[in-house]
Image 1 (cartoon, one colour):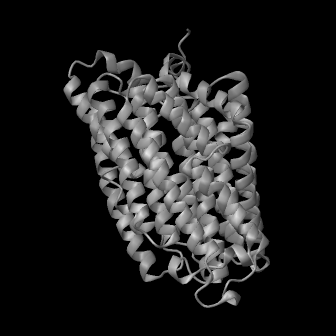
Image 2 (cartoon, one colour):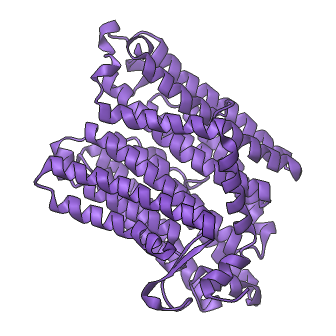
Image 3 (cartoon, rainbow, N blue to C red):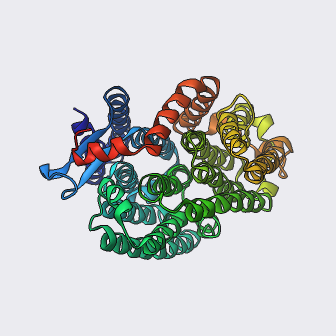
Length: 499
């Protein structure tokens, strides 16, 4: 049962991409098929998570080729959770897109490309093979490039070129690391690499391969100093596209870092994890300072993606059970919050005519409920209790203090304070001050299509639920952390060994 569900997580977006392509000449049918496909992916992902939580890890060996010789899909708690969150983000952003895209965007293959992107994301979360992780990254890259250029404006093309150029550099480093790892271990299966690493004599080359992967995944995750492509690109596409990018793409890079540096490379933590810790601190501080200097909503939010990535890497770098719990919890919280903030920015721009803070205002008077919906994810991002971001940051700070890493705990707290500044700047400029063109320039919320408002309300509700009922989410994150820090069960299950 579990194997079939794992396969369906990949088959459903494939079929959705095909169906929406075939329905290209029928706009209403295409939109319905697209949304139905996103909901189907969510249903299958939830069912897969339920099986993993009740019965344990799910392994699918393609073509009945036993690992490590065949293509393996290995679904543990972290992988299953990430597919559910990816599906939730897909539903929200595709639903929002129904109220945003016009005929030009639809003819640019918005719907098929969105499902191909979800296919690449889910494939990356489920794969048990390093080379196939590269393949899924390339699927994501192709789809994201297409989505970034939907609309064909000069700014979109410019952002897409920067995005692809830097990702190709990351791909080159990824392939170099793959070649080194294969030369050292003779395998690319995650479980088999993990089993082979302790026997590798040339640990210096192994550490070099680990550092190359850190740089490759770090560029995709937008960590310091490899982040500069993100704020140059994420403010240019459609809002629904930038929201799904903000929610998912960098988190696939973080997921790959977590997988690599808990399962594959634990032989030299004095180098790898110390480097990760410094990267985490610099990513947090650089990102939040960059956000403070911006005056356009999506640029502010783009810089905050970088800042918040630092928290996730921080938990991985601490390499303690509580630190990994914090990283997993933060991943789930941040995907929902960040995608929602981009969607809210899209509605704000639709009602006021711009995303430049100096050119807009009056939203609290004309659309007070949008102010409430903004307040929830914005102050969750800043870490206000009892919202989801508070618990995520609390766990990470506690994890740092437990092992005496005072400086990284201080960096996390200072970053949280500066995040409040950015969120209050958006609130003061977009919502509180009058519109520069007069009160009538800010239109009421009723003028925004319901397809745009429903996903925003749903994601805000999810943020509140995670905050008020954090215990079940913490328990799942704790289980994922245990599996990551003790990969013996993962290795035995994938390789079919009797424990």
